[in-house]
Image 1 (spheres, rainbow over the protein chains, first blue to last red):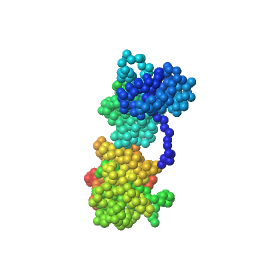
Image 2 (spheres, chains in turn orange, yellow; image 1 turned 120 degrees about the vertical axis):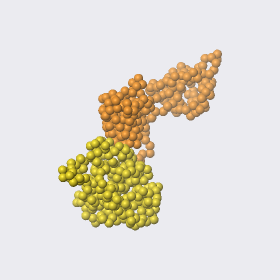
Image 3 (cartoon, each protein chain N blue to C red; image 1 turned 135 degrees about the horizontal axis):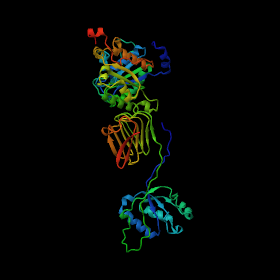
Image 4 (cartoon, each protein chain N blue to C red; image 1 turned 180 degrees about the vertical axis):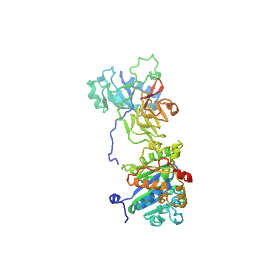
Length: 249
Length: 286
């Protein structure tokens, strides 16, 4: 049915960011070798973004092709430079990697584990670079999933990475899941699970609450307890202080 | 070749191929075969050339309800396996012109139904029939899926009780996902609800779901409500489709359902408790 040979899609890729502070070939190579020795499998074929935002060494004195070559030697796969200083853009472009502007993405810094500190005894000359593992996450807005036909017993609908809107009834024995909110504009008689990937701000809104189970980020209530909290009436379900609240709308 | 309703004639000319109707339910014993026999006969009585196929391979019943069990020589599986032609296997009904029955094999199981085989039989029948009624086996496994795969119209037979309603809901889900129409991206299968074994007295007593309750849960158009009746059992045992007995409420209710299936507007009957007249009560009438 689909005649297209490809489709373009937004996506999130998890990569390691190597924040370079100082650079000298021997020091860099030595420390990198130490890191890789700690977890050899983890670094194999790992995509890496080299960040120059906090670079203290004069970038014009660094041979970036050499940096890339060293990374590759240890199994890392550099894919981009981030926060390139304007004076060395040309040199970086020559390496063939992508240039990402600094501070473009929000990021979550994974707390440094003790093992991240260089293994060398402190008596040795002060380490010149510190490699930090930073996991970057990019939020891509996805359109909500809208279902207009009834969801029948035995059917399962999952709105991945977005909200789920159902314009009809959800039957007993059906299951609806969403990473975001769930709206049901018919009777909700099946199971509804919002925030299934852990979003505890997700909510469930429904026109008539007759559900077998409602859940937000893994906190659930069964129909027996729902019967005391606005049964067959419009209601919303949300999580507050790890307690699931069911409130009439 | 046949005398047809004037308004239906135009439609038939446009559509060269037969309409395939599946009578299905999920749950067993709700009246699928009785309804297939009644509706198939009803369509034939209206002048449409109709074939009823028994998909319940291994648990053949349609031949008994249609009263043609002694005339079964070849069956559906023989035709699929090319051991017999369709012409040899089709049994012409003795009472109703335009009506043919394709019985199931009693000695085989559902694995004998291959997708290509079923398609070939339906294609061949489509060329010179107006309607093909597929009597589905119970369950949601291969036999039932095969019966509904090629359907244009689905009649979901439901009893007014919770387990039957839930199974019907399940089969409606399968109709929305596992049919040729869905896979080809065509208009979805037309869905109809046929409520059988309805007893207004027990509904009033709260022992049975009401029409409204069932409609609320399944949310599909109501084709008909067949009242619970001894006439249905009697007709089955005699091998006469109950629709042929127009004296009975069940027979009349099936006629109404066929009319609605053909797009006519007919009021629903037999939904309320009928008040017995003084004389009837005196005579102990049922």
